[in-house]
Length: 163
Image 1 (tube, rainbow, N blue to C red):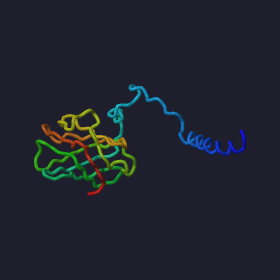
Image 2: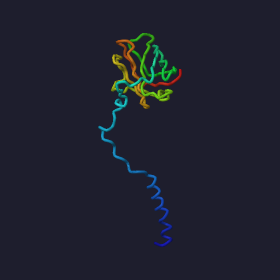
Image 3: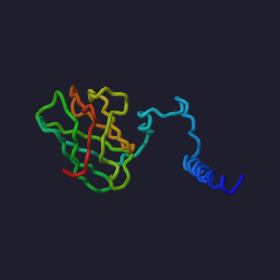
Image 4: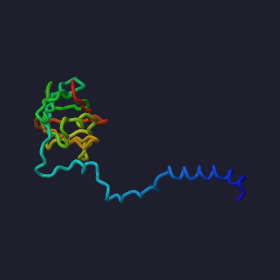
């Protein structure tokens, strides 16, 4: 190859090599369906799993938010929750729950929670309601009274620290 032909070919060759180097490794095949964890199974609790926090909420009829306290690591953090409704309750309903998978300081607590046990968006609180977020924090709400139904908004329940 002549030097002139090499000068014309070299930039194209170097460009192709640079592009190939940036492309990264070839894509990996998708895992078999039986190897992928179901979303609800990520929130499975083993017997004896310690509670990382206790949640106390007050939901008032006609109010868009429930307010309360998250007690964790010796701290009582104010909490606001949007997206919960109660049918069959009075003007004020007090809810209790346990929080699992919460690191020290509660930094993974705020966010959007969805029903993680195959629920449909509302649950008769006979066995509790399990809500999980993307940080794998799990809230297990306890039934306030028999016959009450706790509803969860279609987009989920949004929690934040503070009022």
